[in-house]
Image (tube, rainbow, N blue to C red):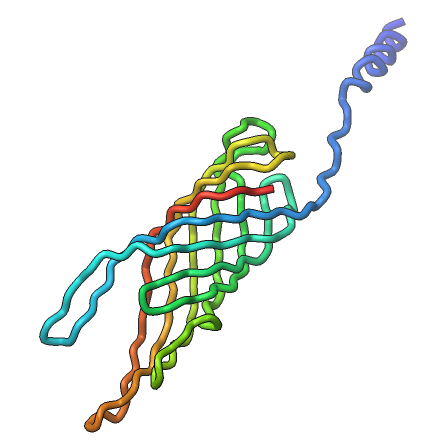
Amino acid sequence: MKQLLLVLAILYVLPVQAQQERFKPVFTNMTELGASFGQVRYGNPFSESVARRVNLTAQTFNGVQVSQRLAIGGTIGVDMYNTALLIPLCAGMRYDLARPGQKNLRVFTSLDTGWGFAWLQEDPTGYKTTGGWVIAPGIGFRTGKTSNANFIMSLSYKRQEAEADKPLFWNELAKHETRVYNRMLIRLGVSF
C-alpha cells in the first residue's frame, strides 16, 4: 500500500515539472543617435588653448541574440568631430544585467571595439586624415517588453584614434598630427 501511494504521489508531481523551452537565436538591432561631449587642446607649444566640444554621433548594432542575455554582432556608426568625420566599424556585444521577462525596464552593458575609417572625410588640399583604433564600453537601459520594440537610453565612453598629415611649409620636413578623441556619449534609440 505504501508503495502504491508513493508511485501515485510521484505520478501526480511529474506533470508539474514542465520543461523549459529551449532558447532559439534571433536577430537583434539597436539603433541610436546622440551627442558626444569632450575637450580638445589646440594651438602651438607656446600658446595652448582648451575648449569643450559637443558633436553628433549615431550608430547601429546588428547581431544575433545568442542567449536570453547576450547578443553578439557588428556595429557601424558615424562620429562627426570638428575636424574629422569618422566611420567606426566594430565588433560588438550587448549583455542584459537583468533577466528578460522579469521587468519592463532592463539594464544592459555594451562593448564595441574596432577601427574608425575616414571614408567620408573631405580633406582640404594637402591634408590627409586617416582613422584608427576605437573602443567604446557603455551602460544603458531598455524599456518595453522583450518581444516588442524597446526604447533605449545609453551612456558610454568612446576612445577614437585618428591621424592627419598636413601640408609642409618651406622649412618643414614633416607635419603629422596624432589625435585621440576621448568622449562621453549620451544616446537615445530603439531596439528590436
